[in-house]
Length: 403
Ligand SMILES: C=C(O[C@H]1C=CC=C(C(=O)O)[C@@H]1O)C(=O)O
Image (tube, rainbow, N blue to C red; front, side):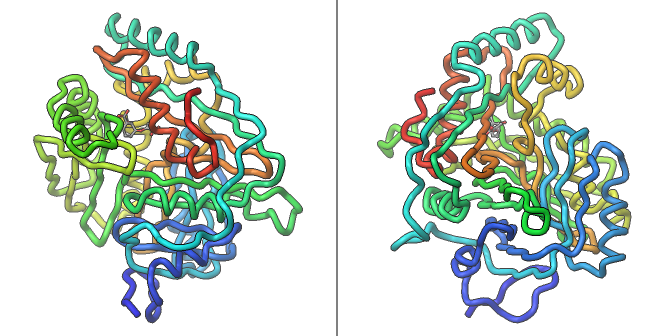
């Protein structure tokens, strides 16, 4: 038995793997490098768009009124769309997951889908990158993250347990998650909807007056040969284009957190981090909150102040967002939004919804994006989105992502 860390913790749990194995559709799981949380049931929901303003204060009031330990859920990319936040009935904590499981999985791997449709087609995505490069050349923007999506359809309903299990096996690092997006599925006879994925990016976490953000930007696909893989990583670390792409995110994160902090530490140099498929440039920004009692300084408040960072939108934010709305053919939904948990004391952990898919019935919708800056190449950015899509597509039983 190992002690578990987390607010609201009662007693001990057998181990983190047991908690991940307890995930079933309708529950919400977030298993990260610090802790695992699994919530069940719904005491109250908050589905107003985040853009109405005052969401952190509304969450604070709801937690107080419900005497609830936590809020959990997801906020979509667009602040005009409905959030899916809930106060759960039950909360269980476990330690961080440290390794991918071995042995038999929970059910067979996902079967190959009946249909996969790219939205837009690869050629159109390259054209979108060229349009973005023209806007960058013209001086309208410095960076924009352009996403594309795949619609995946099966003959039978998707089992989120199998998808989560495959994601868990695919990569022991980062934040494994499955968020229930339809709390009324049972009572209102609605189809269950789940946001499942494995994200490498912590938007923000808060523990007491300590705040941490871990922006990522700048990517290279991993190589199976260890020497070549190490060379790929070294090249990424010194790449002027990727460092510029990364610096724009770190600057925006620092500027967004500064008003909330009495002290902020922003390393001058990025470091490397990896998933099983990709290398990324990474920076850990840490700070001390000036007024931890203010709901706007809660983990969710800070997450909403940061969102959308240039890791998923661009710089300047408004111009990049405008370009995304004009040229991306499909709505992002919860992709590139935030998901996580927060408590009444303002502590919490919010992750950027990346490397994920929305699963509903026989259908899954997955997205991935790439940051476009001066010097980006349409072919390389398309290849980067393919590599990023690989995480969730492998879990969905989609072979190769040559789409
Ligand atoms: C937008 C995505 O990744 C972000 C996170 C890490 C690196 C990124 C990049 O190098 O473009 C992206 O900013 C995605 O996975 O869809």
